[in-house]
Length: 187
Image 1 (cartoon, rainbow, N blue to C red):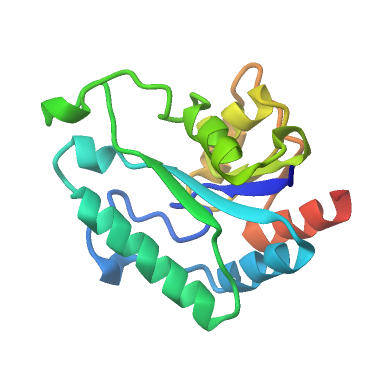
Image 2: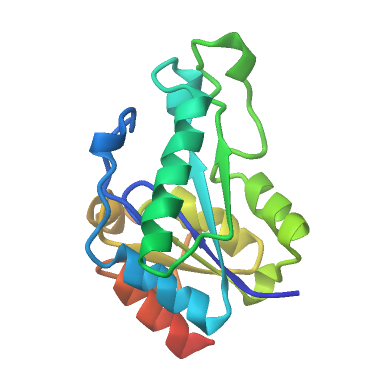
C-alpha cells in the first residue's frame, strides 16, 4: 500500500472560480505544476477529490467536469507532472436535478471518495496527506488517519479565521507549494 496526497481542486490546485463552468475560467496557480511534479518525484500518489455541486444545481454538466479534468491533466503533463486519479461528488441534498438530490457518503466532509480511492489505488490512508482550502476538505482525511494541511489560498484565510471544532490540521501553509514542501519534510 502506498501513501498519497489528496488534493482539493478549486482554491487549492487551481484558483477558486465559484462554479467553474468554462475552461477559460480554469486558472492554475503559478506553482501548481511544480508542486504536483515534486509529489510525483517523491513517489506519492496524487489524487484530486472535489465536490462538484454545480452538477446537482444544474450549472455544470458532468461532461464538463471530465473536460476540465482532462485540461488539468494536459497542462500538468506539459510540465512533467500528473494526477493519478480524479474523484468528484456530483450530489447535493438541495439539488435542483432530482437524480443528484441525495445525502451521499461521497460529498466532503464525508469520507466516501477517499475510501474509494484508497481501494482503487491500493493507498495507505494512515500514511497519506490531505490538502485543501476548506475545513471540509481536510476533515475526512483526518477522520481516516491522514494528516491534513489547510492552505490559505481560495477560502483558506477565511477558514483559518473560523476554526472548526474537532478539525485540527497538521499544518497551515500559504499555498500548495508550501504544503508540498511541508509534506516532503514529513515523509
